[in-house]
Length: 169
Ligand SMILES: CCCCCCCC(=O)SCCNC(=O)CCNC(=O)[C@H](O)C(C)(C)COP(=O)(O)OP(=O)(O)OC[C@H]1O[C@@H](n2cnc3c(N)ncnc32)[C@H](O)[C@@H]1OP(=O)(O)O
Image (cartoon, rainbow, N blue to C red; front, side):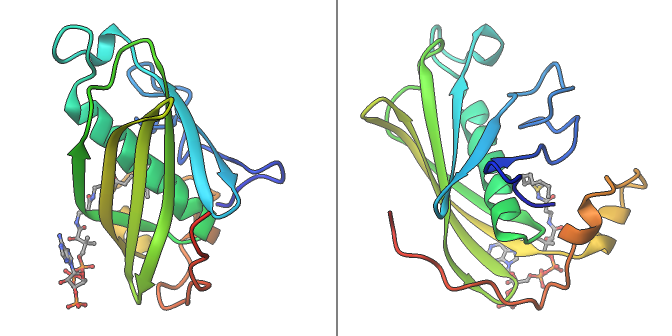
């Protein structure tokens, strides 16, 4: 799995909660590569409500987690979330166009240290740090479900070195 020629990132799979177009309960993220970052716009609605008019914090965390899944596609590395930490800086307002940005801060063998932000215009709504651990195909075989064909190339040997992180842009 890799970004398309136009920079857009294909869904992890059609039913992915974060980015799958066939998941009616999902967030429907459309992600794209912008230099060494992944970006996506997100408009949350009443399905995602926590406090009245505000998005549920778990939904915000889910969006950031799946955004990191887009960073993995950009990196060409299959990995899973081992740890996700979110700092909520301002309420995420329903009906607002929110902007997600994610990137790889550094990698250390199987460990990928990813960072992301959620903005509402100039307002920082949330920022996240995550540890992802590279996995191979055996990890996903445990569900017994059929793996998407395009995952085969994505599930490269976990020893493969990542290119050096690019500076912040
Ligand atoms: C890929 C699809 C799209 C992505 C969508 C968005 C991402 C997701 O939602 S993924 C779903 C949620 N995550 C999961 O289900 C993962 C569940 N956890 C696991 O399967 C395992 O714990 C896994 C694979 C993360 C690590 O297990 P394993 O491969 O045995 O590695 P393990 O030896 O325990 O850890 C490797 C290293 O990472 C470190 N590590 C592992 N977990 C953590 C943690 N939570 N915090 C800090 N360090 C950790 C270990 O200490 C170890 O470090 P070192 O090599 O220095 O000793």
